[in-house]
Amino acid sequence: SLLPEKGNIKIPPPDYTKLLRTQLVLNLIHAIPEGSPASAKIHSLIIFNCHYPDRLNMRDIKVDVINTAEQISDLVDWLVFRHAPPVPHSPTMYIDLEGVNLCREGSISILTLMIDTGTPTNRVCLIDVHSLDAKAFNTAGVQSKTIKDILQDDNIPKVFFDVRNDSDALFAQFGVALQGVEDVQLMESATRKTTGARKFLNGLSKCIEQNMLFSPHGFDRASWTAAKKKGERLFKAEYGGSYEVFNQRPIPEEIISYCVGDVVCLPELRVRFWKGAYSWQHLVDEETKKRVAASQKPGYQPHGRDRAMAPWSENQNKDLDTWNYVSPPCDYFGEDWMDEDWHDDFDNDYEDWTRADWQGPPS
Image 1 (cartoon, rainbow, N blue to C red):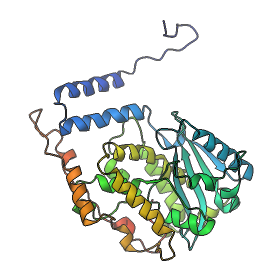
Image 2: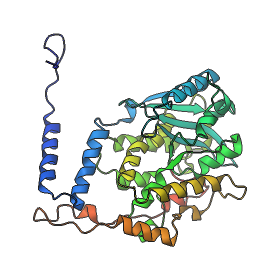
Image 3: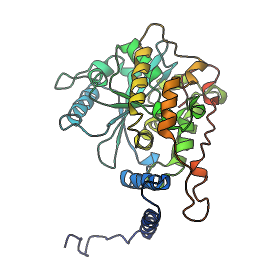
């Protein structure tokens, strides 16, 4: 038998809640015709059950602060090893930057890197750019590779949420020309059903609010929100804070949690938006490359309300309207049981993007 024998081994009791939920899902699968919109909706729930077997709580995440050249060298060696053939099928690097006026005109304080290890325990590294300066990007590992080399490797995917000012700061201050970028903000925009719904881009908070209402086995939204609010009180002017807090050393625990929050949600968001995106994936890839290229040009403007506008052209919007069209759901159960889920009710305002004393797009 492959089952553990009783004795010193503690065998946990069955999780009847999970068993019941699984049975309910199976019942729905058998009740709904194959290929219908409702069937696709249920299929997406199964995907999340497979990808996220345990609830992700902010307090359970392993965090390393990288503030020495030796640690950078070790991290580089690990990343090179992780991306050696056979190359992982999905991205392993999820990145966000924090700083004071984060762009070419300001400074980078922290580079947050979440590494998908292929196990339930993901690793988050906070690279202390404020302390290390250029050594953060130019310190080599045993194979003479650097963080800069990895960031510029088009064959190693890196996932960002709104890469523009991050790319601008990296290129202007450290000569890092990002390659292999995936931008979750553009993925989310492309999933919306109509041209009108895609008019404005969403910040990360609104993206989570509108797209992660249901995550029973994955992302812990309450934990994430609490960590973000605590961090914001330290740097937002309305709370008497200052962005200089990102340069405070040692890094305050609230800022560590805030930084972790900017990357820990990206894997699940990416899965949600990228599934079934075969028809428009090339549009997102194209616009992401345009974002990176534009951020490296002399005339790039890191601030302004026009940055809240989605980049899609008229023809791109027509294509997205066609690809995202969903027929109204049939009433399989004698009631409008999925009515709310199928209305395109995005609030899609851009209040997050019109703050005074611009410090970059909202997180």
